[in-house]
Image 1 (cartoon, rainbow over the protein chains, first blue to last red):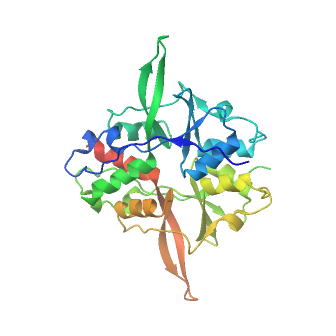
Image 2 (image 1 turned 135 degrees about the vertical axis):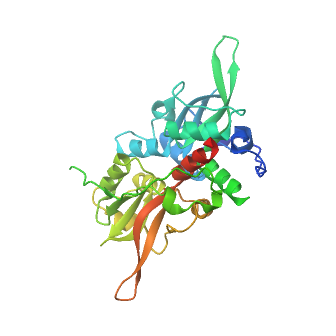
Image 3 (image 1 turned 90 degrees about the vertical axis):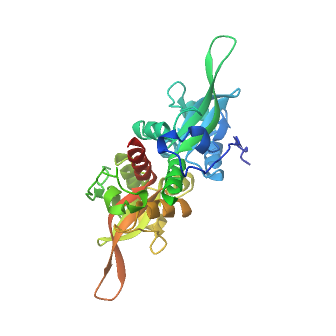
Length: 160
Length: 160
């Protein structure tokens, strides 16, 4: 079966960190495109998306809101087990909100790196918090910051 | 079957980068312990080592010399296929020398980050080159620099 295509969000990227103290660099300036898939996509098709987008973590959405995340490590664990990856949807195996560490545009790149290291994750979703009419708080994903993002930022800083 | 235990190398870690220009930080100061397995370990046992050591890349040795590397992404691809992971040794599926990008103690952390990004790898082995009596050059692995290493270094630099 031909895999469904995952959808991604655009982001603005800037590289002018030359004369800025490291701590003042914001998440909004460095975030990159997350790969997002729907909860009902099969594990197998999700892994295909992981490869097509050459990324380490998939973010999962339902009705436009972030509901979960799955890492390459999670997928490797699943493929070793007895799960039928062609039938089971990713929504079943993902780490589900509110157990996902997030970050906002206005936070610093330093804070993003800190959360990545402290929580031992490869990638942190950048979110905008939205309160719906029923009073519940949801997250819209607008980007991600990964160890790759931070490594590229380190290169920019060292290049000066 | 109980998995064989992978062996690791010790490394010195320093954190005094406060008053040093970024480009002067050397690989020797930041490298961490690599997880190394022998070529004849099965793919399955190797994946167990990946999880036990909570690492993203395994390095492979034969007779004390670096002969290969396998990433979490490589393993995920293999587990999706028809390979008998309990029988096939890691030496069959690894990326083999000389197709492995390496770095040395005296190189800069900047250069390590640059090679990681340019070659799209998660981790680069730190090696010492040795010429044997038969005139061939081999690499002894003494550490690794990963995107995690660089992210931690970024944190140290930003903390000042």
